[in-house]
Length: 390
Image 1 (cartoon, one colour):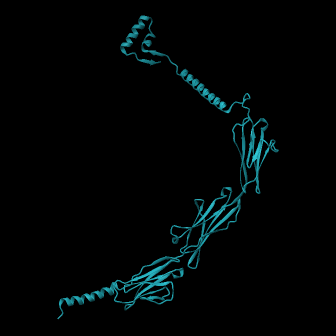
Image 2 (image 1 turned 30 degrees about the vertical axis):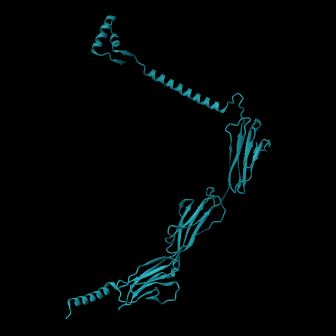
């Protein structure tokens, strides 16, 4: 006779076998995502195993490892861990061709299998900007094309003008398992675009938060533009005086040419030209006239003029600029004050009236002085000397 303990052991054994067969003896895997060139670890686990072998196969159904035995000659594939409960292998130097569905098999009767999908991210190549030939001329229409290849999934391209994002036209083409992405900018350039940096930024999941970037700095040629700045508002005799020819252009217009009244500078000892500056060391009346500055490059010539009038601070009618300014301010204050007085006088004239006390009002109609006094006293008794405007 079997004891109760023996029955419990038998039923426990069969229960264990039933549990293992229904749920525990089944291979478990996970999908894996890896960047191209990286290493993928493929793991297959079994919770309950009665010493049954595990096997990994590639998408072509070629056996990679059967237990701890390597079946495929590929130096990139190595055994990481092999036991009755786990079979883990690694595949190094991953390429896009390794992507696909891998199979883990548990050799029970019947064989049980499960799938794990290996996703390979294609790393985009560093971008290039083409389509632009330096230099451009002001008014030209130019095209900037940013291209990157080898991405999977397709990369995202963004454009920046200096630090401000601008929008380009995107084009995506498949090349095998990867993609080639292009983005195009079309611009009509002017002198404000000279020296501007256009940056192409390539973003992709395989690059994390470190996008690839390439920058093109525009060079735009344009004709000169000239202005003249001066060192004194009111030039006076004996003063040091300087004119500067401020010129813009690309190529930079060099040199600048100075003239006076359509001819050469008359006094080269006092009128000194250094680069873009004309300096007159000591002004006098003979320096009066029109000074012209000209600058040129291969796209054109530009000029500007300044009319110089030298003041004599000691001459009648030519006051010191500070005194003239003070006099002007005083004149304005006096004028405003007079206007206010006139306006106030007109206002008072329009609202003029007779100011009477109540007593005076009572005496106004009295035939004589005694009656006026009586009337005034009567009014005073009736009211307490109220005042009126009539």
